[in-house]
Image (tube, rainbow, N blue to C red; front, side, top):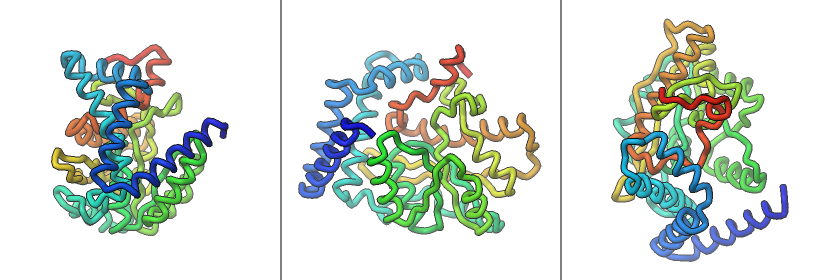
Length: 297
């Protein structure tokens, strides 16, 4: 923790209080303005966003990629407004589920629990709340650099019934939760560094966490891909993909890599529904680029 971390969290808290004091429409407008300042004026991580969009969408003209980049910051700001201003659209009961809960119910029917494979897409914090309103959910999380933000997020998740466990040393809690028939949520779209496996992601080779595949193979539980997306009308839809079964899959390293690639591809389907709502500010291909790769997959 640094003095700047304290200032950043203090400013965030003040903006949150202001959001709750303003009418919802005014709070949305304020955050959209802040999103524009962050992306177009201060250009916070804008170089990362622009480079990754150019690499993943080389066929798009520059002005279209710039439109997507502006949408990234507008989406992030809108998500904050929805959560902090208590926007009625950001309540679990207001979220549509397509095609419905049948894939999750079927996955849980085997009594081995199920893994939810998802991404930093749409208002993903809201997605967790929707799941926790219906099922016993354990969310595997990475610690944030700013511990005060991390503590705040932890408190908010627990307030909405979401259990959490840190990614380091998560295995005992994850296995126990699955054996008890619960859901374990894993966000699988961040760079996994040298310890990850190489899989295609948005047309490029990336380092991915193999945890979902490993846990599924170890326990026999299915993996259910999901992604939440905000429509043009502001309505959120949680998309539920067909469950992936570990039955008949080899548990060696090649098998884990192949299963991880299949899970990643299933989650990617949702990202392509609304690419501007994905977390492009994260350096997703950092490890492959560091190692001198980054070729098209």
